Image 1 (cartoon, rainbow, N blue to C red):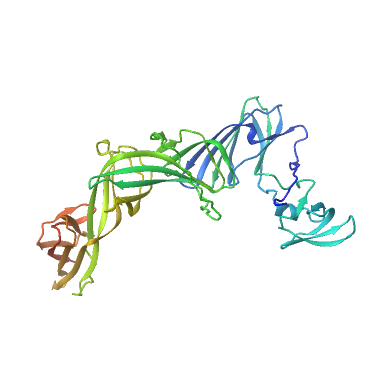
Image 2 (image 1 turned 120 degrees about the vertical axis):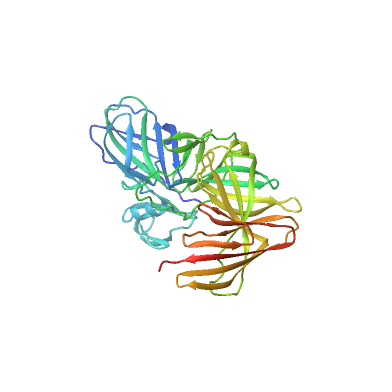
Length: 460
């Protein structure tokens, strides 16, 4: 015998004597809507068949085990009180609850009744009453043994259960609406570089169910944006089962406006199982124009030292979210992973970064790595105190391009109010929010030197 056997009865619950007790299971469910936010919270609307009678105590199962009970509302009548129970009947909890009571144990050779004396550790103690008496130690978790129980104790339930003491039921469908933690989502993007100007961008929604509840045949929407939430519960990943499922190719999911947020609705019903990650296609933009840029922030050299420092140029990919450049849609925040084909035509990973929520018309610039063949050697060749409050510093940067192709690197000097560039071997420009930019153009297999002087004026 390879499975434990629990013969279960529904828990007996104390109810209003004048009300009828009614159990509402997922077989009574008419519709299930999940609206999931990317801040570990979701709103659930669970609609079920009408309840007979005017007054009833409704036992509703398949409720999220991370429900926020203070957010509950009920449609279809009025409510005296809600009670929520998440003390689930398991093999372990049943054994602990039945200590001192009668159980039946069985293996391939024996079957007898006994009083359960102890259920601690890996074994249980029972006092056998037939066919002969005696205290017996049995393995707690051995699949050769089966344990029979006559009932589920009142404080245990077969699944997370919401008890609704309702009155003035109006013969319509009943519906509970509540918020729960344990459900979240994020966007993931795959960007494949086609050539030096175009890439394809595939977007996926990854939905994380960290609860112990199955949401069967549900309508799922995800909301991009950041509604304020007081003291959100931290995300728990322990024991998470990765079981990602990708939908078949779908048309682009167009967002709807919900207040100041964007809501994307999956155009089919789906089941989100406990401890599962599910992926659904969001959109596919096959020809997106992009620009690749190389930057270096000046300031690696140690002041007062003539020893040069070396670093590699940083690689950035920029996109403009407009239709003319292959986008022009609301793009939710998420991780973007970039791929490019090698000399054998095989796609290889070249970097990743996170993108913020991107409205139509916005631009984004993503750092994806460092260029192996673009090297910057930086040094401070002189530093002179002109007066007590004026310092003159001379910078030298040697930029080397080991590629066969022509490349450009922007050398950026962070700007502050005390500085003034008095001379430079390469023309520069001031860019607000960025600094002084020295654009360096390099032929293949070449080196270009930038040298400039800066005056720093300090308050006396």
